[in-house]
Image (cartoon, rainbow, N blue to C red; front, side, top):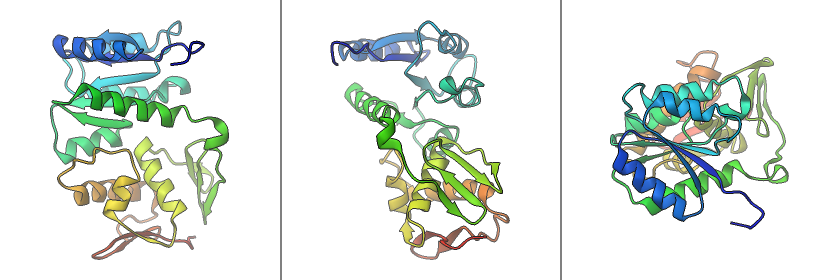
Length: 244
């Protein structure tokens, strides 16, 4: 950390005091400013404190007063755009694909299952913050148009017929990857690695199929007969170059 740079403020919402203490101590040793909340309510109060902005949240899935998925959804739907874009790394003892995909669909930026090594969590935090803090000149990309569908990489917005389509962070990342590789047949493994997922998934195919199904529901005129994201049986998916 440079001398003229203030430490990143990380909010840990975790009801297990021993785990919270372990994470807090490890991240503090690595020059992060830490706040801890044992409940979702207290965590949201800290997040809404303007005097000390939160740079990243570590959010446990199982909390005593509110499900972590609900917390994630509340953050992503916050009327303050700065708060709604707060990076979220989700912690959970549940390691199956369904929970992982649901957490990412709700807007989490990354997901790590307990038990984990603190250094792995640190690596994930650094990766998420790097993506979030990219300078504007590195983020600048041309808008992508496919018929009535438009993808705006800089603002992470999508429209159909100039009407906004609300996507989660991972849905946008998946669509953006499709849009920048239109016409190419992409395997499920390629799509999986295009997003910051937990690569230890035991069922990548199912995870990607769930992502695709939910994305189709948002951007296809008829999800049962998709014209934008085409299934190529035995291989993967293709994003149509010519769309209406």
